[in-house]
Image 1 (spheres, one colour):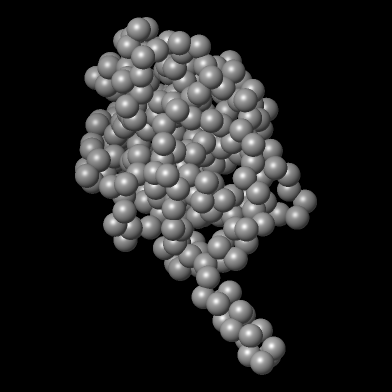
Image 2 (cartoon, helix red, strand yellow):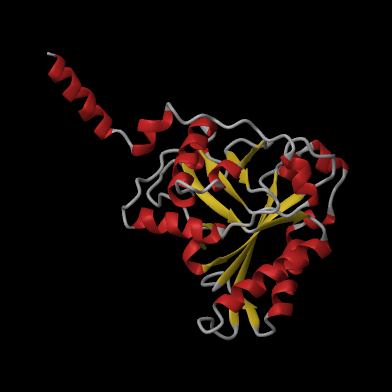
Length: 273
């Protein structure tokens, strides 16, 4: 009888997703309450994860398991260096690196998506998208221009021989309802206007690559600007995440965004996209 019970338990474990087998031992990290003030004054690399609303805890454990596979090795402290940041919006998880550690978040997410597409990684249940954040800044014209220019130049320098002319690019700006919050209503930031933000980002791209045009259907590079709904920052302060993504990491329909981890997921209506 004991042998039968052992075999049954083993069979049940094999049917479980790999992360589920370990979810009970993955501890949820505490929020880093110093992170919001650091984001106001320093640039950080990070990961912004969209997930099913009311499943944030499960998604956080799932994300930790995924990132552990692609970020950490036995001698690497990178995963331990990630801080969990408290947000004011449901369906979102934000992990940031310390301001003095800049990881190639683009390559990490690219490797995750590659592994998923080749079926070397099980599709996640709760995490839907991982935005690789290359830099953060306050939502101010000069700061945003400088960050976009730096990231676009880095992108172009790395892919100089592979880019067409004119260079096709697209811009995505996501506020995730932050304009509805009381603090923003009372201290309206002109850059929250979508058209103004697009204008600033497009100008920064054109300054780096003179021969460049907007192409929303098949961009070679996409600049995503994401307002971070941070908890515990002064009224009127707005921090954005900035990413310059290659075509293999974005979807253009129905709107410009980072690729879904599971293209067959039918539950995206229940998440903050």
